[in-house]
Structure formats: C-alpha cells, structure tokens
Image 1 (tube, rainbow, N blue to C red):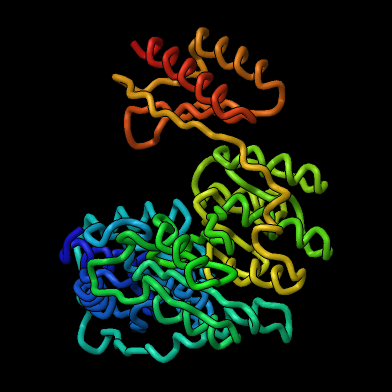
Image 2 (tube, rainbow, N blue to C red):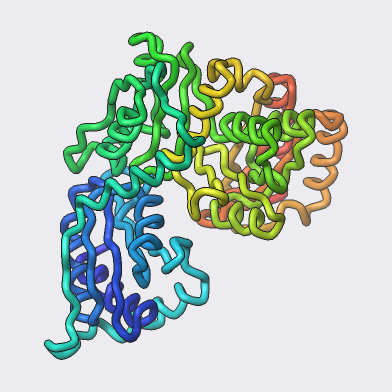
Length: 425
C-alpha cells in the first residue's frame, strides 16, 4: 500500500459514499505508517469536498460506534488488525457503523480507475482533530455493563498488544473500579502485535498468576479480537468465551435466537450448548459470514475461535472491550472464577493439516475422499467432526478432524490428509 493509493482511495470512496459532501471520521492503530496514511486520506477527502474528523488511535469498533454517534457519512480505520507493524490496511464503515456492502465496495473499486479529484476552493472540505472525543467510546463500553455494576474487587492484567486499545482499555477498566496491571501498552510504532496481545498471550499467562490476579484480558492490535486468561494462567479462546456468555444469557433470560459460530468452532462448544438447550449454528469462516447468519437467524451472539465476538444487541461489529466486559459481568454476578465458568465446556482435540495441491479442487467431489470421510465419521460415532475446506487464497486443502481421543484424532487426520494428497495428484 502506498500514499498515492491511499489518496486515490479516499477520493474514490468520497465520490461513492458522500457524493454531495458529508463528514468522515478517521481513526487508526499505532503503526508508524498510520501518520502517513492518515495525511493522505485527509488530503483526498478534503479535496473531494468531505469534512474530516481525525480522532487518532482508537479501536476499530470505537470508530464504528462514533461514526454512528457523530452522524458521519462513513468512517475509516487505518489498521492491519492482528498483523505485524509493516502490514497495512484501510477499513470502511457505513453511516450505521456496519461494514460496506459488496455493491459499495465494487463501486469504489470502479471509481479508483478515475484517479483523485480536487474540487474548487469554495467546495473543499475542512479537517478538525477530535481526540478528546475518545472518552465517548469509553463511556459507551461502560454502559454495556448492567446498571450500577462496578468491577471493584477484581484484579485484572490487561494486554493491549501495543495497539489501538493502549489508552482506552486500561482507563476503562480502572474507571470501573478494577485494579489493573497493564502490559503491551507502550506502543512505539513498530511493536504492535509483537509477542503480545490475543495472538501471543504467553506473557499474559505468566503475569496473571505471577501478580496473583484473577483474570487476564488480551486484545489484538485494532481491538476487535479477545482472549482471556484464568487465575491459573490458562487461555480461554473465543469458543469458551461464547459458552460463558451464552450460558449466562440463557439463565437470565436475555439470550435471543441461536448462537452462531463457524465450521472451525470446537465441537465441545456445540455439545456444551446443546446440554444447556441452546441452538448452535455454524457459518463459513469469516466475521462477515458469522454476522450474516446471525441476522438471518435472529441471533444476537456469535463469533469465532480467534476471539472475534459479535454482540448484536450492543454493537455492530466485533468489540474486544465490550465482549470482555460481558464476561467480567458474569464473574461479578456469579462470584465464580473464569476457570469455574468455562469448566462446563470440554475442548475436543482438534488437528488441522494443510495439504498443498498443484491446483485447487473440491475434495468432496473425489469418491475416495468421500468414502474416507464417511469411514472416519463412523469411527467418531457422533463425538467428533471432519471438515475439508479449500483455502480461498492459496492452493491448499485444509483437513480438520476433531474427536475425544487426541491420538486417534491425529491418526484420522493424517489418514485423510494422505488420501486428499493422493487424489490431488
């Protein structure tokens, strides 16, 4: 990604999303490149006649919320999410704080071919900094807790991945009364997601029992993924957090519709929810598909194993801080530890093998593969799953097998991968 591209993208997006002029909110994470792309986007939008609000580092879900709160035409986030600092990305939200439709994205792509446009001086937009408005997002997050609830009495280690949550995350928890120990909250432009955050919670796992905290929270660089750590230093992934929230909502009567996961969600989640009388649906991998199935089925709780959790009754997109607060609320209401709350969900051993193929093909269409899948599923006896999924970006077939017995599950996955490899020729 280059400055020229960012400038051109801003101009194209302005013509599609605010053709008569309007207002855009721009936020970013802590990558050193954010300053450069922020300036390029600002120039492109102002030249196209759009007023610009610059809010600086703020979690992606915070931009989604404030885009709606400030009645902007659309919002923009400069972030490559959980990736290293030298990766870059630009995300858009519509006026409602939701992701752009495929149609709007295609129109922007078409407009890119025209190049940037500069309006006459009297039609140019204006740019203002609104950094102090970050507190409104913090207030929103706090408002998602039950009325009158505080986090007093909880000692929490919070790892913000040296990313967009590094200010608002610790302040939010401290203002709610928690005793906090911050780590991963010293960004230098190049250390985002570097050995910290939700993708690398090892330090958090050591710190929580080391400082005798009860809970650890780890988010990714742009603040939309969450994992948590119990007092023993064990990680709770997105599947386990979904279970904790779904079970609590079921018991207090606030659960609406089914819980939505993905084809990669652990089979233990499905069984545990079934025992609680909660319907569970699986979407293809990707938060867009999870969100789509939630809306289609009327569900308000869904997410992925990675910790990208969506609470449609509270947010329009995945929000790590809001999700963490919902789990902390369950801890406060029940008086139980995270370890106790998650104990009802067994995690089945899951073996994932990537089989490289010379060219992409549908493994399910191969008779030998189909026969092998049926044979392995029969051995699993409804206590496991087989998933075959072609990669969308590379010539790889992903072979995943789950079962109660780890050794047998590994053997089944290896057997199936060998057959897929042979069929791929």
